[in-house]
Length: 173
Ligand code: HEC
Image (cartoon, rainbow, N blue to C red):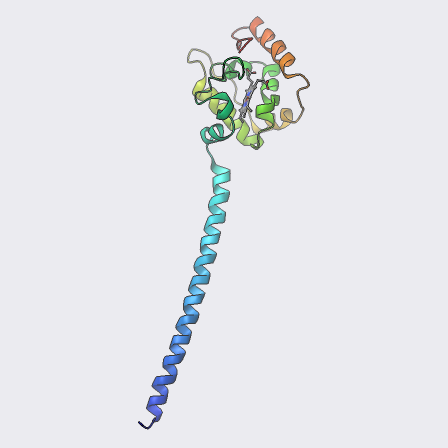
């Protein structure tokens, strides 16, 4: 057996310590990496929720009923293309739009609902008609939570008044 001199001891022991430290460092690095990944995930989830574009919000929360080109479904769902901007000409029309169940009851925040409606008028407004004043978040907040007692009766009344003063959405859809 080889005698262990002081030199041998110092090479063996520090070696074990080094390994130990390395394992410790690896664990610590892994822990940090996991923490970083979790933080990145949380941040990107938050950012995703806050920064979905109006077009994406339309796709997720409205398009299933109103259609890929906001064209509606004859006999069942009114078109928003060409029609929404006309509703927005009068305060009664704006009030109706903000309280209609599909819009008012969506999970979108007031600001995001305003953005989707404004985006729709930009994208699907009739080219030869003036753009309506955009909705603000405050306007949505004021109107949205008062439920419409009778959606169809309110719509008929609003469309009738609009027709008396210019371009109006179709009475039937
Ligand atoms: C479950 C189907 C459905 C979804 C989802 C939906 N809507 Fe509607 N929407 C309707 C129907 C049906 C009407 C007609 C009024 C009524 O009967 O409620 C309507 C009416 C409207 C109107 C008034 C148009 C008119 O001619 O009366 C607007 C504006 C509107 N929706 C916007 C939206 C927006 C914005 C979203 C997404 C945040 C949305 N809707 C989601 C079904 C839906």
